[in-house]
Length: 433
Image 1: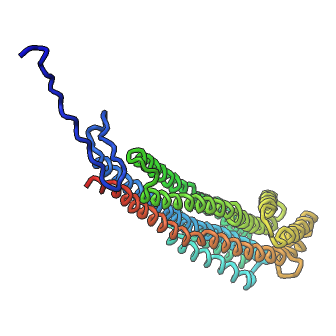
Image 2 (image 1 turned 180 degrees about the vertical axis):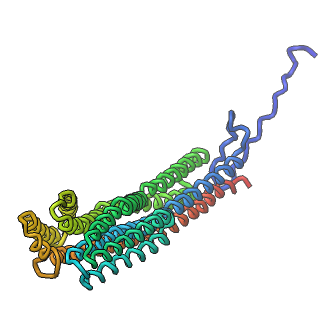
């Protein structure tokens, strides 16, 4: 056979891959790194990724909103514990103020004042027990406090016994008991007030809520990328399942964002409003009762009570400053000024040599006496405290049902996105069967 007549064999043309009837063009297997996976394998991996991402969004959102509900519940309990501790401090100082004032009468103290003292100490013991049960973290400090209260009560009884016999040593026992109360018991209460106020403030930090927003945004971004990949690979703009899944996460994102922002604004208003007022009003009442006690101690000292008067002045300044921070204080500043005016008169009488007249002004229940004017102020401040305490508790508790509902909705949104996204990817996967 000659070279001119030799025929070159032509390979048969490749048979084109048929396109499924009624469906779009299926792209050929890509070259490069993705060559190890054919399209069905990639779709299965995409389906798994969509499901995992959507469920993760739901679980994180549920966990975050559940934690916020729990956290605000704890904040409510910490605020209640704070009130208990402040009441303990107030009752102790009220008992001391009553005991010192009764000493000025001499001999057998008035029955009404003895009953007030006993009631204050009884309430203190009850509150200590309640506080120890409510907050185990405070139990050790409260146990130590209880021992100091018992020691204080015993010292007061010694002072009373000597005072009934007209012995001057009774006044010394009284001053010692009062000094020990301030040096050993009150610092424990100050630390407990600080600790519980800090706990409540920390529990009111709702910034963790934005974690749910972040994961919802991350999930939505993942679904959008999945839609873009599917659209490019299958030359279709819309995948119904992935679009519906994206809509579910978009709703979750918007709902979480609005919910967290509203919650943050509301809790901040509570923290800066009624909760701050609660702290300031309680501090004012504590300092006021301390001042009342020092007023009597100044007279008991008979000319050598400058240190007690200095302590009174310091407490009075703090009361005035704390009352100035309160909104709608219902005349509390005016009532405190009425009491301070009586105190000024007492000091003028004592410094002028009229000790007996000063004692009359400081004791008894006359309309212009120290006991009457201070009692009116203390009762009004106690009522104010009850109001802001209830307002704080209500403000913190009212968010919890909504947060529980939010947690459930986030879980449902995540599950819905997982199911819808899987159905959307499965629709493309069926084209290969």
